[in-house]
Amino acid sequence: MQSIRGILTQEEELTFMNILFSSSASIRSGNFGLSRKEVEKQLNISGNDERFFSFITRVNQAISRYFQLIYDEKRDQVVALMRVPAYSARNTLSKESLAILLYMFYQQEVLQHEFTLFDQLLDALGHETKKANQRVLLNIDPLKKIGAIEDYETNSSERAFQLTAIGVHLFSDSFLRRTAEFSQSNQLNKEEVLKFFKRYNLYQKGVGE
Image 1 (cartoon, helix red, strand yellow):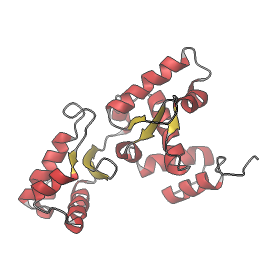
Image 2 (tube, rainbow, N blue to C red):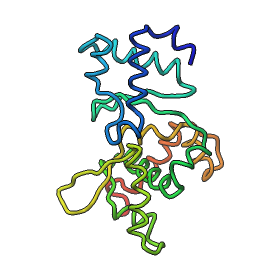
Image 3 (cartoon, helix red, strand yellow):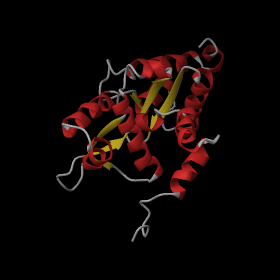
């Protein structure tokens, strides 16, 4: 963290600290981080795309071992994520919550679905469990509390969820690689993992028809 002083100005360092503070679930539950407008105001760079993204890039170069700054375009928010070892993450998310998040990541980031229906989660992860409805909802709640997913409004009465930028970035490249290696027994990079998923995309139009 000491290296950040050699990369950021005092103004930028203070802005980063404010983003870090505002990204805490205990401080800003449901509204993590700072808006782009507020970040630009603190940096005195209103409407300057180059300087805005340069700030994020330089912060990430300095703190990549411990944190990651992400820009959530949909919410227009800048959020700081903390990197934690797997055993610490297990204290935050149960294996069921992690499975739900991974399933949604696959559907929305790989298959490019806009949202995931609750019934899809129930069918994939809870159909063999007693009180499945209640149990799936129970494990969705922690994901909402950390800002990884949010409710998605559909034109029907069906309940649906969508990943946020936090949820998309929650899995590290190494985690995704190990997940694929476990089933394929090969050394893969992230691009190869995504290619594999897309190649065998069972949801493509025409497949199985």
